[in-house]
Length: 138
Image (cartoon, rainbow, N blue to C red; front, side):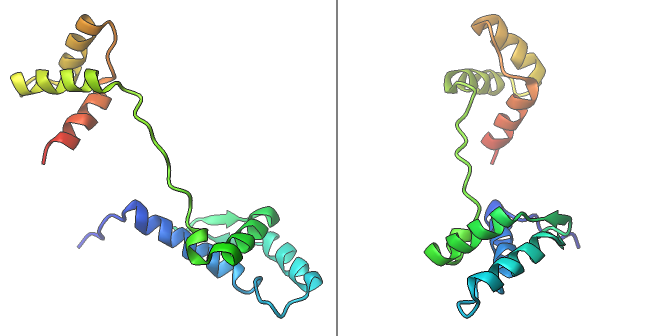
């Protein structure tokens, strides 16, 4: 049975857990600054197995940043920042493409792209339209 695909939230949590597993021994309040510095340098010199099984090198700066973040905001501060993706394709163009597809469902994305380009002077790629149509289908 295939494993279910992880969501972005699952991957972000896995990354945060990985970061925590690296910094936990370094964030021990009983360590002196000298001891912590030595441990951070030692950890930065190693190759680690990343959250998704690949070899990863982590810099001292990243380890220090993660320690500061964890101290300031706990586990949630170790989560990667969410991407703020703004659509590049104008909504009107996508609406026109959706109307054209609804008029004749057999039209291909490439055909619709040619029609949109003829009407608007510009059209998104056929692949962009395919993704848009896939999001519209329940």
